[in-house]
Image (tube, rainbow, N blue to C red):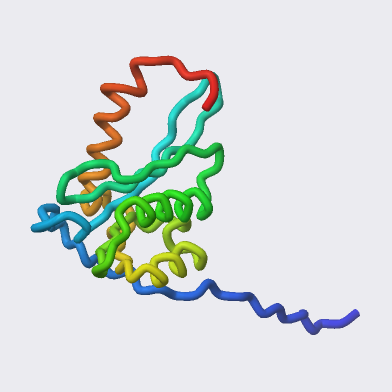
Length: 154
């Protein structure tokens, strides 16, 4: 019997900058300076729900892109970002602010940000006030629209 333990080399996830470029400055001077994003869920029956990813332009507070999926993954985040990019066609760098979700830190999402000169900005872990505008958007969306109806499918 051997006393030597096998050594496994674990792959570490790439480390990306997690700087908060927004710093709770929620009033940009013009459109396409700051976009924010987050996920929320929508119940579609007992013990079932879907996920909504939305992107807001902080200047107008309008939702510029959204997508619904039964999975909360990087693909949903990437697809929603592509919708926003195709709709707005940004020419200048934009601060793109989100929480610390793994979907927003995935390699595929970061690659998409880099390809379109979007500057990643992240809230502090467990601190929703850094992304308050998006959180409030979801609050009122649920209060005024989603929770007033019963959904059975997407």
